[in-house]
Image (tube, rainbow, N blue to C red; front, side):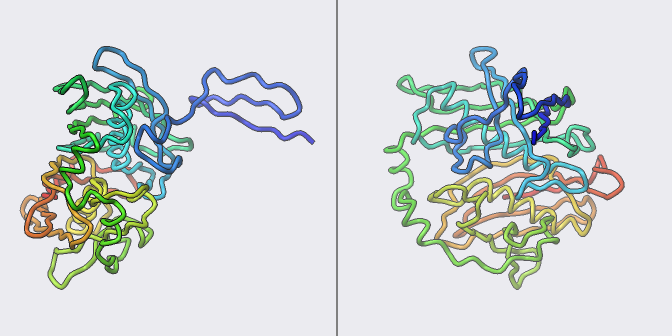
Length: 338
């Protein structure tokens, strides 16, 4: 018995059988090595390739699954936070592959922002994974002793020729010895993880725009619009590999979930975000999120802090989702101080 299979690429299908030779595809898609994007799980690698177009300009390709276990699609729309994670993977990729930063060096976020098009066709989830192209311009490049020390990225993203959004980020690069001096007693990953605070009970998943309770990163407190950050170091996406501090992606998600709660009850997506990382959030102390809504403008001011210090500041714009329309454009803004 012969088994028939179909191979899909750019909307076209070619058929063959296992009983005879098949014509090879015009292109073969694979992911970049997981080490280049600082992921342990192959399933979490979103980038599929890259090439240099100028000294500090690149084209990077990515594929988004129809629905991700954490950044899940809702009402036929990809979660824009998947775009944020895609951009996050770009800077380690280019650091190692294009700027020859050695593995083992540490990349530290200074700021990050993105903007997606409300109501854009490019965010619709289809019958196939989304093929995304990122046009990356690197600027304000700093070298010290011939090695990359800091870099800013401007990213323009398109899907099937349709503009998806843009992003801007900056990070610094630190050799292992420098990072150990910077982190001091917290540099030991195993010790930091062992000292993690207990994980409190989550809010109901639907209140933060998720289906699974394990994806909820907010825990209720006795005060209104105040939550404790749930730092579950066993989470397979947010803690894909051991780290010595609260990951930046977890802080982004905490702010998004807080904005969702305050701007509810209708479901929303975070179509834009501007953030600045001000200090490390440690694993051995509670981290708190506070939110206040401006009833006149719909703005929500959020503060994420630890031990009396802000760890993250920024703003989030949310857009409402409905079952009839994928996204309602020109939705009210939601601001978050992370």
